[in-house]
Length: 350
Image (cartoon, rainbow, N blue to C red; front, side, top):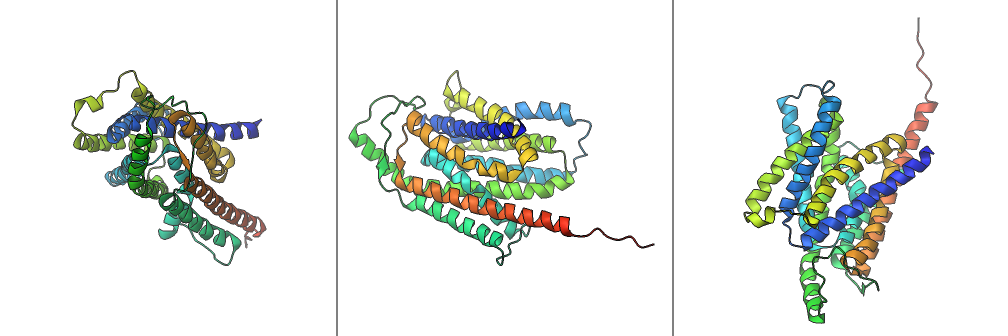
């Protein structure tokens, strides 16, 4: 029964992220400012996490020094505020399915950043080390394919456009104009996606160091969410002064903010922590391609996105690179655990 819960949980997690890609893309296409969306999303997450962290860890949280606070502030600025704002712009320039595909290179980039910071090692004489390096190369090839090769376009027969901002039938001239506009920004969008994921990977790596001085994980997460809300507000107020852009109303904008703030930040993050505790991070990483599959199909049906051969090939390469890196990592963990078992216990001399 426990195994079934783990498998069900990773499917639910990837479905939640699928919804995040879809509603975010829908509100951006509908004209919502990306900076304001990030602020509202983080504010909603803060409203959820801060009271929860206060009641759960108010007695166990260690004192927060000024130096540790500055480190957490920097982490929030890099891994959340910068990453999410760049990701929002990139999603506006590209597509929901491409954003889901690009997320598959996160484990490879995280390993690469950890390697540069000397927190990970590579032994090229072992198959695990070769697999890690090959995975990074394959991921980069996948990203380059999505950026520079579009290829033939493929449309699904059914297009409901349930989340599309407009329902008017477009003319061939409009389709051609949209295609030409997207081609000029597509490459920029892909590189912005990679930059966003790179910031996210550095954030993941550096968190391990900061958590040593402030080990309360829930309070640590809530504080980052609060700080990123303040930072995102400053960015949004500088970039957008029009009052109408800040209005939500009972529409898809409010739905997207509530969904990303409460469901993604709250439920998905909790489920991820639970799955990692039960099955480890590799098991969670292996489920990442599900979000690409779910998002690709859903975006074509609900948003009317047009799939290109380059996006599909690039997505497959990214998934292949992901599995190379995860296989190499799991192989090293197996070797490490077997070495610990075969090492004889130290003898105590009288």
